[in-house]
Length: 74
Figure 1 (tube, rainbow, N blue to C red):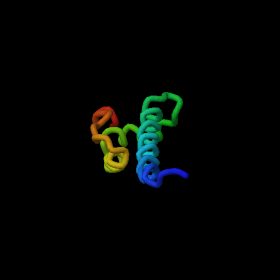
Figure 2: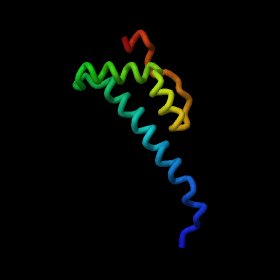
Figure 3: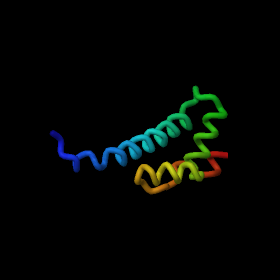
Figure 4: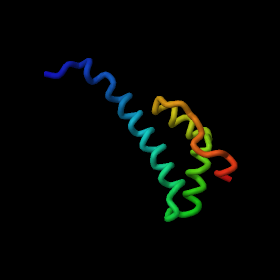
């Protein structure tokens, strides 16, 4: 039988993994010229440090450093 302590971090790990996947997808969307322009702009605004970006960074356990400047995202 498994040690119950080994599973205590599973929900936290799942949230961190999801948060990292959201940020990674935004990077892909922002940089891919084949993505619709509206989706690119949304991703660029997200990566420029909007409120949702900061929330996902907190969930991922990473510092919410802007990956794009607001000037680039506009």
